[in-house]
Length: 592
Image 1 (cartoon, helix red, strand yellow):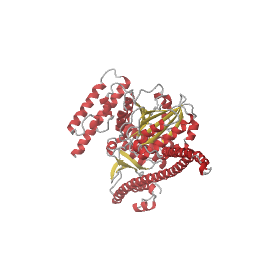
Image 2 (cartoon, one colour):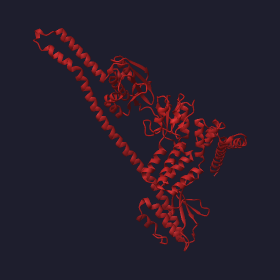
Image 3 (cartoon, one colour):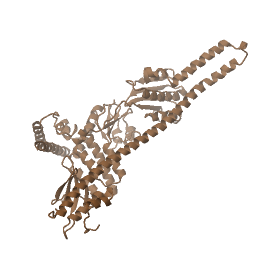
Image 4 (cartoon, one colour):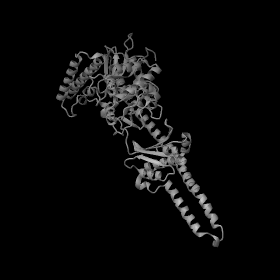
């Protein structure tokens, strides 16, 4: 279709255009229909109106339009989407043009809504397929483990009894009168006892009644190597979790006790059951080879077995078995995201971005993935929406910092770190500058609460950074313009950067707890920002917002703030003014 082609009927455009290109085809057809004589073809932008009034570009014609603001343009409602911007304003005196505009707006709205529904359907299908594949892999692993258990049981029974059975056969070979029956009876009783002990080692009778901790203590007491047991596992969990954990730790004790050197078994409860077996005089690679079946078995149950050689010469084997009854994270709630416009804007930008599906899905995953907090040498905090906790019992030194920095390493991608004990020299420096480290004295529970309140903004920042990198690689100029506009117009991103400084303990002293709350440290709702109760009336909210604006206006006039202090006060002034504007807008909507 050339620049001066005659516009087609809407039904013809829909019937002949692939779904992926339908929005652009409808906009192009409308632009041709609205063109007036020798005048240039009007420029069109389809804009989604978000709840906070922000307009997000979904499509434009011509395609290379970077989306700069237009002073002279008409806006026409698109049902269920937002508005259609046309510049320059068209001449709608002709009935044919008015009819084409109305029909195009209706079909643009229907197309956008259908695209949203299809995307949700595709995501649901992908999640179902992923779950099915996970189930198949788990079934295969479980089959290998069952076979390994059968072999292990047979080996345990045969290797411990074959010598005694041969000896019994030798003693019974003479004629009946020459058999030493007392010796035969003693050998038979010993054979039965050894067989019973072997079966108990594979299926311990006391495990269902006493639990994994007491059974392991009993096993340690009977070990050929001296075993010191420290710590405890806390409350009991389900039978399948305890059974899998016990057998893995028992296998480790048997493998490491062969040298007869002393061992230490440390037990504790984190997001599941954890045991660490340590001892000297052993080769780490040999221990790992001996535990190959145990690694496979506990992996099939969702746990993990790790072998490493410590700097002090000890070999340490850590067994972790997650408790499926313990929840370490909760999804973001709609109430949290609704109070954070930046989250909604980034989500809309992802829906409108014209990038390969794989890269967009990675950005959407970043927006949906909880913020990951590493708790070093601290207790497991209660789960909060939007935060995933990972526990670490190792000392916070430079070596651990290097491991945590590696997003592909054993700790996975870590967004924030809180240490229950003061970290050692070099730990913080070894981390990435993007990883948020809480200042000393912050408890894990407080860290989780803080991150949960900020989670919608943190994940939006993460997704926006990934989208910017993808758009830069693809040379998507229009998308890069949209990202820059979103960053420059978003006060929440500026507030969150200042909150990072507050959390690290590097912010100016003028940023106190009240200032942090105003910045959104406890949530984005105006009442939360102002320190009011959730049921505070509009008049009370208005008065508190005015007081906040006046406070930070006075603070701006304070001498001796310095550069960092003045920048912080400017952000706080904008925050207070933003809360006041939102309160006024809310009052107008309620009045209307």
